[in-house]
Image 1 (tube, rainbow, N blue to C red):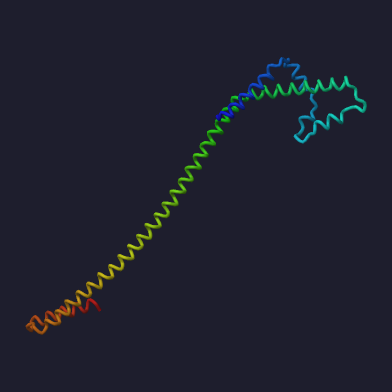
Image 2: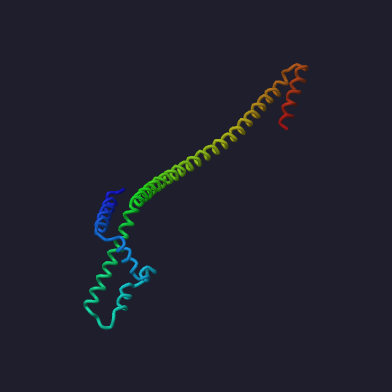
Length: 192
């Protein structure tokens, strides 16, 4: 827990202890609480000041007013003590729940940092993947161009060989002449 929260809990605890230390008989305390009008427990929009002013008699008697004020103070003290008792009774579970909420908040903050980092890394990976994909596409296109160039070079080589054979026909003997002519026909047939 944070130091400021611990300080607040400590101050609240001390105030509640002071209220609890006021001696009051539990039976008398219950009777005082039971004497509180039901209308005070009905809803949050209840205007208790207006309600008490409307109950005042037309002629005010100082003695009766002081007695009634003391009764209201006793009722307030009894309710405050009961609330203080309930708060102190539930304080360990409150502290435990507060620690759980604080841990949950820390985990959520950590989760947010993890998500932010993951998004950043995903964006970088996406950019790198796009660059790599474009590089692969460029390499594939280059490969296709080089394959076409290689095919053209082989064709040129074959044509050079064919030209050589055509020129050598004049110098060949008749039996070699027909063999060379047959090779030329095969080469031409393969490119047609």
